[in-house]
Length: 223
Image (cartoon, rainbow, N blue to C red):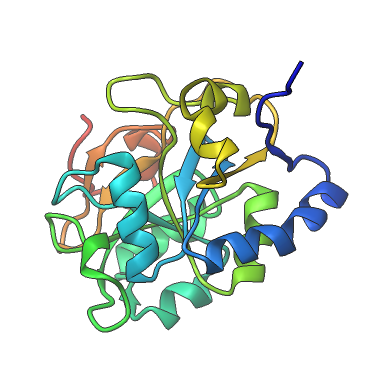
């Protein structure tokens, strides 16, 4: 009996370290990566145009619906030329690393236009997942991120969920699957538009607006 495709163990610190070299090689070849986050499993890759185009094709992503960027530290935001306003900095200081995505201005010369949303900003999250933090630090650049599911289906919460839908792509090497185990049920990250003077919640999620308002009282949206 032939075994089906499997993910790369990505749970314990030794497993995470053992996965790094092969994962970096896969990303350098513009490959798509499937990985656990602090919320759901995601798809992503490097931020160069070829890698972004491959992810767009695989996900059948419509124009004007960009991916977000996962970072492992504030220095990556500075290196990309993205701008944290005072209010955005207050949210970042309290809720990063964690399930808060901030849409930031800037980055015109350093970020692919395919990653820019309809509001003109770049969506960024400092992930709190320790394995991803280690991987992104080893990359030295952000990792693109989108949900690892097919349109209209629930978010993937385990490597098995991904294999049930993307088994040929994993078996063929198009997707490298990092198996971080089954994730606890969670809402997606809260998304806040920081490109205007008053910050605005554009997707409710894991962090309630009332908590965000403790840091930014004039926040708009999500009640």
